[in-house]
Length: 380
Image (cartoon, rainbow, N blue to C red; front, side, top):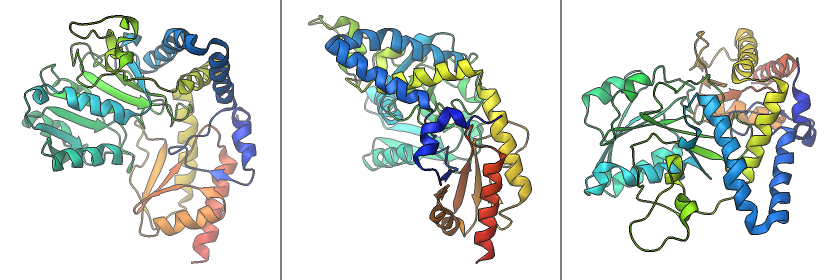
């Protein structure tokens, strides 16, 4: 069954385009526009008082959707921010070792996104952190053998599509006095079937709406376990939204994940996110079903052997899989550019071509991609 009708506006905006970069900028469903307009209408109607709704039912609905998706026991553990980098800074600043002025010992996978890698490199330059890296296959063993303050790992690596097999081994190391374990779920949220119920009291989990939640920018979230950083060092006025009239004495913090909040933000992303979640429920579309649809398209492409001179870094193996295929080859950039010239959008990172399928694709789209690659390679 085709679900293109859910994305009619995005598809009609560029009729000749084939977009195979859903892992980069996932198309927004039509209903997300309704959510955007609802945010505008609430601001016009309620002005300053809009925050009562934003921090009330809109906020609670979004928390509930995420908690159900991740099987979290308490939606209140979730906080929102414009981006996950904001939360990384807050978590790092609140590490117990930082309170005594000690350098933070950090362990990360060797495939972390630029935002994390750049920030860590700068903290290393400033003498505030020491960073070790390890492949996903050995990071748990290395974590068990080292005295780290922070263990940071992507659930799905952005460049290779490799998936963290088991977070429970890392979670078993986590303690409020260190180490803290942070799982970056940006390519895992609503791409993999997630059940964090057994580790929710141990790990931090980051995610966002820009990818597979189909809600666009500005709606990122943090799940924060109780007992870890009860009073974050970097804090904004929204972290005490219900206590604005207080004066003097120790700063109070909102309970749950809200203790990690910053200051004024654009709430339209929450409206878009809630609108998309309502659409998925109405259509009966779950992460499991969408993943199965994408897996069938990935299988079709792989079986066509359209890229014989490339190495597939993340082959299908029957287990959890990224929503994109990562092909490594020296001609990756050239092929990306040649496809783009035909209005066929993929994504390239160095010598890795990433091809991301989505619910707005069908087998005919994959066939068109295969044909275009054949035509390009025949000419080279």
